[in-house]
Length: 411
Image 1: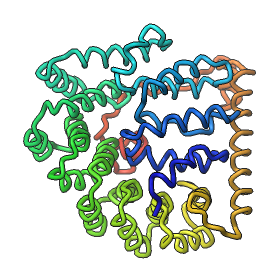
Image 2 (image 1 turned 180 degrees about the vertical axis):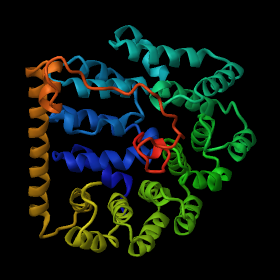
Image 3 (image 1 turned 90 degrees about the vertical axis):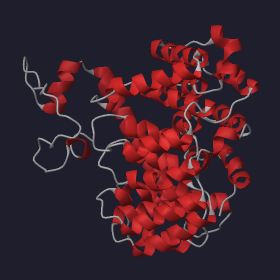
């Protein structure tokens, strides 16, 4: 299996697929939150590349910062060589930094309106008493009831959870009780944010409840529960998740759970994946389990993943070729297929770049009305019909599938 020091240096690798695999190792596992050696490598990698957009900077949102990296970010963001997409991600890295590091530079931060609001919200939270913070959290949850995820300020909710956790405003018994009596099927966000809080507080007693949420028929709860299990990150989590993986009949349980194992960097995770993969008949779930073995750096799992690449897997979900290629380079594994895999990866990257350029040119060259005519066949004076009726997250999907809207067309 990989270890942190082994993977860390590959953030500087010139090939984006390898660099991104290294960033993923620390980002999805949350191991980067306490390691101040990572962000200097990210910044050095950005200085070396001419194609920063291919670097998955969202993994670095909560990497630990220092005064030096904050200053470097402030210098890098205005650079004319940095594209707009990369600027956005670097600003998000700054916005998630420790406020104590940001405060000396508040006058230098050049943020858009949304970024400024997020920064001011964080400053306001820092000035709240514990009681005020807890009340604000409860008010936020109440006011979010029944709203779509894009209609609530999820950044604000996440920051509330983080601040509550750091200060230990709620005792563990309160959080556990909330989880026990929460209803995952209601229209609110209480279960979602308390599940997130349990992970931030690393509450081992919440493991069974969090595992049960993985199979919930909700758009956010399984993801937040999975992240919380990764944050707790113990062998007990792996054991509980594996047991429920084998026993659960919930439609989406294995889909969500299969991603969690590869983010918990323990030998028990590798063993669980090695046991689950041969028995998994669903090609998508098997693909995710195989990817988890690559992300852990499993030498034992390599032959199995290679066989899947040769025999077939769910290519529409992710690229196991990229996973294997990154594994080989990080682990130092020589393999005769490496040149072929590299050619395939580069060809796909070129295809995507060409498609992006084509869409960009289309957006620049035609008006929105003529774009509608070309893309959808509408004639002059005819506008596309827009159904303004709102469908609730838990309502039956109007397409007639029999599923809830959030698990069908609403997804």
